[in-house]
Image (cartoon, rainbow, N blue to C red):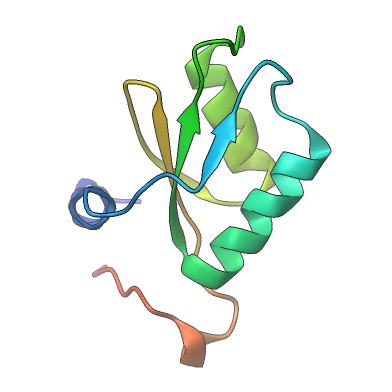
Length: 98
């Protein structure tokens, strides 16, 4: 992903609210599956890491991106932004320039 594409996604992510929270339980298979489903529907999502989560934010974000086959757009504070294109090109909501 180029810096221009990442910048566009960061701008879009500023206006969305976190839809998941990762807490004391850490990254479970259930959370991973739910995030993957949400990425399929929304393409761009924001996840909140709670204070009681002991895992490293960067490691958590990278693991989640890898498990969901998505791009890590940014980590800002305790929030993670992920992006993954909709599989069906006709249903894509977000187009980023090449």
